[in-house]
Image (cartoon, rainbow, N blue to C red):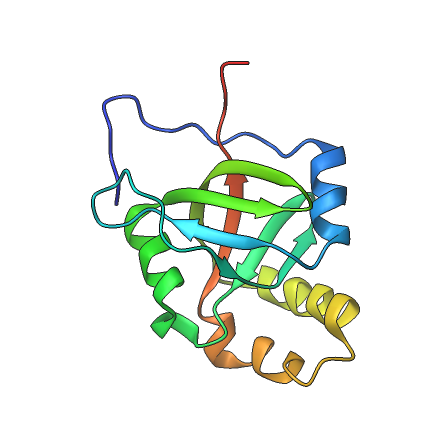
Length: 136
């Protein structure tokens, strides 16, 4: 995992940013590359909000390249709804996945890709996305 002397600090999303991201379907995720400084190629991915937190999943499960980079590096950048944020990533497991499934059903219910996204493979690659604290 990417480590620096001044470890990144995650903060809560602002309600406005979270609403905008939740209402959009254009999230692009770019975990850092192995050098820990260069952002990876943006990958379009589904996102959902549960209890004020932003979650994404790897369609190809833990084999998804962006997922592997996100877990290994622990940080990167997202772009969605006209918002660009440096973020930290945290793999999640457990009962929260049931609520994330429900959020996927509500947001993407008409898609033929829904079933794989709430299946075991994708559930195993669930990531919480948190914005980094900035010195604004």
